Length: 443
Image (tube, rainbow, N blue to C red):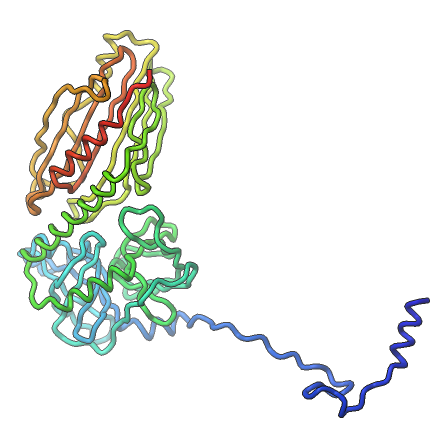
């Protein structure tokens, strides 16, 4: 009954005169017009962006002088009218290390594409960047972004994958990789071999990163634009460069880098990790990734539990030489079935004085020189082998391998190893001492 009265009252309500309606209101009986929602700015069509930018990207060809043929390829992109281009250090590293055997040229896509000789002006070996220069000016080049884009921004990587010609790949900006030793951007997109050194850009064509590596499955990495911008600005001041000058630049950068890592490690106490009856060095810094496991082989009369930490990153010097590594490994060995003599033989067999080290050749490093001695670490008798090898091209840099094994128990013990690649001898020894001081027996 109430509903009927309300409807009747509404039916008898007076309709306002037209001149009484608010300004802009529709006449009675005229449907209201709903204003359209604002249209979001859409990203450009990928093919349009590609057509506009492809002339700024080139293929880098490393030429072996004796045969006159390509030995490797990569990508580069122009950043100035004078023909300055950015690429990865690992793309042109052969020229830095063996200029008598290799040279480089750039080729841009097109009917009239010609190979143009280039020279290396400057490098940033820690961030895997290089600046190369061709003598001919260019009409079109990239602008380097002043800042990083927001996370989730749609990006476009360009380069020459597998020598298939200039390609564009869509992906997403996911910010800097957390807890990384060396700055790198996580890019969700396919960066394939040959695209190294190419640009990754926003929809307006500004470079926000340089393609550097991939782990497959749409998992790519970029050098942040800030490092590219700094190197490009510095390279503009370089008048002439030579292989000896570039090697000296690389050596200086490696020395500065190992000093930063050393200071960072020594600034904090070494955390400890329980392993069997011992405490061992744990995750020293956030850039170290740590893993553990125990072998499960019932037929063995002993148990080995491993705990290892590594920076999981390195610095590319050449195809045969890597550096900038921090890694260590612990193995807890114990047995309830072996007597002291048999356990001692097993324990000795798992301890070696010959360190493996990181990748390098006889042209890069000397042989390891080792010192084996028995020391007391936190009151624990410990056998140690400390080994160093020198870098031949970069004076003042060394690889260190430390092996240590406790010898205070009959049927259990811990063996540990530390690898430092590309450190000064003093810094390497200081880090090894701090590392050993974290070893302790808990019984």
